[in-house]
Image: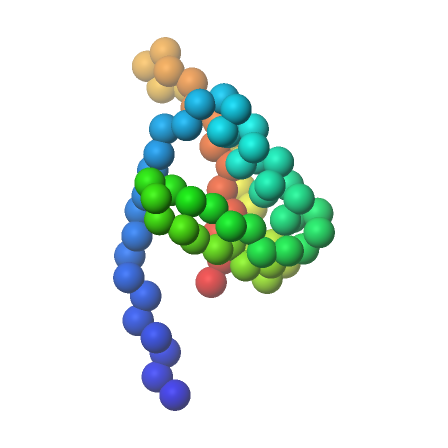
Length: 78
């Protein structure tokens, strides 16, 4: 059976502190309970499957560039 072609997508959205905290809470619950994690970015809904928590690669990044600080957490999976 042929593998389904996936469309490249990159969505970014500025959120306030309360929205960010709620997003992190729900992500943590999905991770702890090994459940799918639902997210909406710019009105588009996405599902991070529970299998991503087991098979994915986690990365934490801290960066300072030209006086600007960045903290990033990444989960990548196939």
